[in-house]
Image (tube, rainbow, N blue to C red; front, side):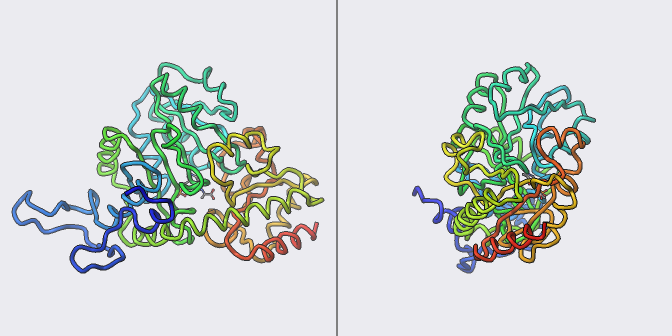
Length: 383
Ligand code: P1T
């Protein structure tokens, strides 16, 4: 039966436990499964390979992204690591040039050593892809909206060009979540998430996932998942399943609060630029409008003064927005990309794309909007 998003978030992939009827998938805290005879078992042999709690979660994720196969990992980085290991030395990857600092770091400092080449390109203009593709290109890595500048990449346009060139497209859908955007429907081959963020949603689990439609690609990835072994434990899978049951409710509120905070910042006298794809003057607002059903609760802004100390004052002064790495939990967080999440990107490169010293990133939570706006107003009032 075709289900709508909220129904899928609560039910997809999850059946009552066959032995007891428990409505919540139990935490199968076991490493191994007894076999009647060697090779005769109930579908489970060893928990690196399969675990019932993880299987339920993987099924839920596949359904949410309109894919067929879900694979969970012990972090978002482990999901990226496993995917890139499918490539061979000599292969090339075209990646967006604004992306999570840790993704940039694993590409540059880990995989370049093994002979994989990464070309970082401004894909907000899709025609830049043509010059970047070579016959060695095997994968295009898209993050949209990007972290931290909320750039928007046209997934459909990238996928069309990639299909012609026989290249896979992976989309890091962490910021949008499947509530606002389903890249597989737009022609992408692989969706990746840092589930640590909105999918788990309560700042208590580190986890990642890959979701695909193609059976052969899924088999390759399952083999890699089992061979490399960066799988999450059953307790974390249980927490992720619980978090996902309210994904639609949380995302709706993140989006509503996000819009109000963005509009407040946009007219504030101390604030210079506000990066949020819901504004009609955002470079790719029309693309965002066509491929997303809402613009979310992530945004970044800069200060008119241009002074690092002022950014620090704002980050120190808020009482509700907590200055911390990460995003996507129910509570509001603030961060300073240049010194925190994106410190691993060289300074010149960072500044070239707009990650300046006064850039502040907000993950707007689901608290009452009046309190959030008052908190930011009072912190900016100290400048
Ligand atoms: O932290 P981990 O679960 O390993 O996921 C890495 C990752 C991948 N992709 C995106 C878009 C991300 O934002 C992240 C993690 N980001 C942060 C920790 C952060 O504060 O931006």
